[in-house]
Length: 397
Picture (cartoon, rainbow, N blue to C red):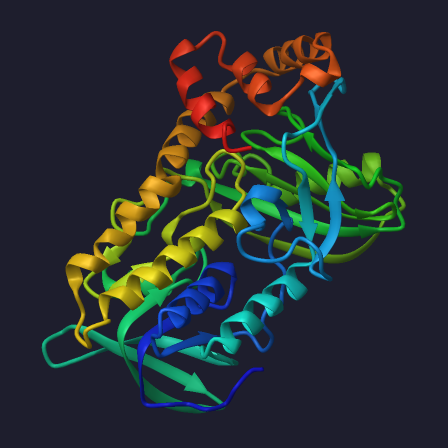
């Protein structure tokens, strides 16, 4: 890996070698479709652009829970209120911190074993349209040369900045308030509890969002922040994170820093147009409440790959089948996505005082009675119409 066998045409072309694209390639290949995936970066899995956290439920259907792609297992979660008080509890399902690079390379191997071709250092520069104006392939810069590779169905899994969606005429714009500004560092030579994920809240630490510490070991962690895009105008997310690091980990050795946007908005109205479909961050299928995207990307990729392969079983595109992709996605995670949006819009308006009160209420519960669901039921107790949304979301944890 990667292969350099560049064919002139395929059943399915996938742009983007992240979790969504790699899983789409795997499941399209399982169904027998001739599938190629183009990734513009030199190596699958690099650079790592996320916190690398995922729940057991979100991971176990796609890969073994034992392997070098698992960096750490999480047993507890600490919520830290603005006044510094902590509410600790255990989730029903254990969480994991991934070695994202190893994880994605393993996903790539699984797809390749089933026949998918994965080609890195291949920059897709545009869609190729036939004489009737239908996308029938991609324009590709590969090894310094320009190519046209034809394909019956094109899956855009090229991240939040998805060019595929724009080229196809899909509206992927996001309001500033829904585009989380995120920055993360890898901090080493620190002292953290490897069993606990920590989340900090409050307008002074992470306005319109939260700050996280995801431990990979006792001395190493991903420490990052995501804040509402409109709040980052007042002060950049990076400044909030740097301020936090100086206060809590002044002697940390920073070995990596990444920044980007996370689309935490309501689901897109259209993620299919003709024979082009979007998956993962490209389709804004990130959990809008937490900003977590890996589990959703895996599920979206699976559905996209299966649906695309089914749509061309007869040799011609069955557009009625292709249109079922967003329907399947909505049944799988769409309702949760909608509920998460409602709760996010409410939580981001909660004052620091209410957050402190919330932490106090949680601490009054015996530890063995604490749960994520009860936490959010407390949050919405003054807005009863959101309780149903909370149940929909947290019954999945």
